[in-house]
Length: 370
Ligand code: IPM
Ligand code: MG
Image (tube, rainbow, N blue to C red; front, top):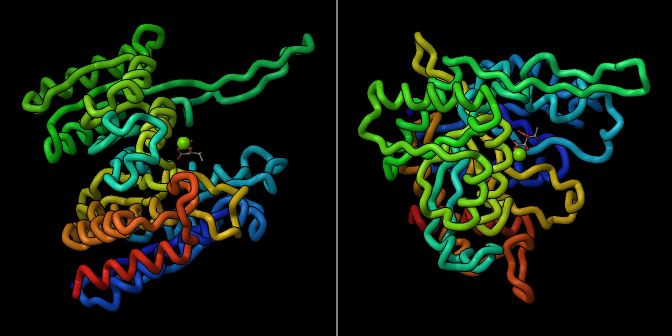
């Protein structure tokens, strides 16, 4: 039986509230026997800025690098609107992604049967939906240089961001997409804007070359990212795995999240390359939603995306497939019983609090293991 070291970074807004619910789930697995989890905790985002004057301290960064997995809540809020750009809460998240080299961001969008009515789309369009967005996470316009605002001296300023991709960055994310497709419905849709962007032309070329070199068994199609966005809301079930760059992936995954009924339902995993010596991948797990400062402290936050993110850690970092399946089942059963936080409740439906949802999922785990 192994012991896994987790670093919990609750962050800001609803982050600490939903992390409290994950801790209940972690304690449940620790009490059950089998692999156990030791958790340390750190600060990130505005919380870290308030304590240390930077969005993540060197000490917590070192802990993240040494951990088996980071479990991340959410960052940001109006309180830090005026903080210098390099110290803004999001800088902590971006530094974790970059320094840990978490280039592969897996964002599944699954429509739980019980929530098919909560989507803004018609039920038959999203019922049974199960797609996976594989977003490149350490390159592109998020990190490309130059990235600056310069004064042109004539009363004008110029803002510049740089979209840049090298072959190896596209190749490694394409491989992740093809390999994951093989465990699913064996289809990859690659999205870029090759009609206007050179990085899109290269993206398309490299994905095609990678496909021709060992992944011919997987079905590959290419789509322009704008058309892809349109197809996502028109007929999302045509997709299995979507592979795309950092910025398009950011946008398309929010669209995909909303298909499922609520942003509060969507977990994600961010993975690095396997270590040459140990085979271990650095990893971070976080909900796709943000810190929701408007509802923070009200008990209205939905902890499901956060709990399901821990489920992804069980699956992808620790290969505890039975435990991961069980946790997913506990979430589905809780929803089947009609338990709803505010974000997923239909008009007039009764709602429960963040803590009650966490407790209900733990009770379902008890029932499933009885
Ligand atoms: C996400 C978020 C982040 C991103 C923000 C908070 C920097 O929107 O994880 O999707 O843009 O990547
Ligand atoms: Mg986003």
